[in-house]
Image (tube, rainbow, N blue to C red; front, side):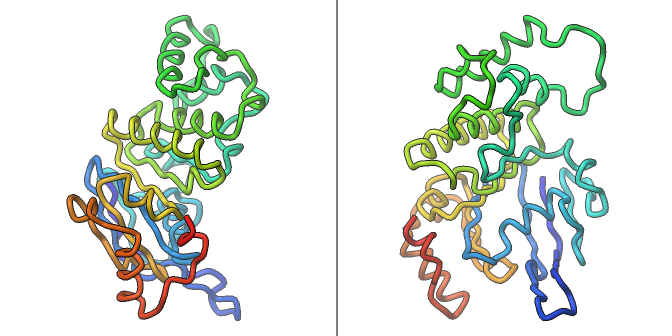
Length: 264
């Protein structure tokens, strides 16, 4: 479902601020893989997601989604393949619009616009059913402005909107990092349920090592723009945070110095 072949990306090339963000990165995801991605600051995690999404071109390598070479496609042309949730809960929704209006925008993404009534009763009932699955009571507030919701409610709504049309690939860029622990746990629970029921191929960046171990069927660790550890299945389930720290030290030749990740 996703194939990254020898991807490289350097920012500010030829200047004193030159930074190699991706270094001959290779990654293959099968249909239905749920991969958690960890690594210190500057490891290339978000750069990888942005490269997949087409936010900026890569210098070398190819990117395929569902067997389609999208390496040269601009961001807006890749959108039909992707669902994405950002770290900021305010990013994925329109605050001045109602919950049901946000849902309708997500449901009609990529479709031609007509002059028919905005939201049909059938559509409204479908939105209500999907919102009820979140367990946040949003199905009873469908005409409320999204700007009145809490950060956690907005992030859960964004997740639902991003997956409403079952994208070929779901990108989660630290989508619980800005939430309190209790709310983050609810959003992760919703993530597991939605990804599982629709068998969505997913890449989830996280700074929380426990979450990286607990969620998904596969874990990859990045360092200086490439993957230094890739583990899946039963071996992943048996991991502890201490194991990840040890693997990092073995692969990088140094200690893990990211306080944020260790404390998480």
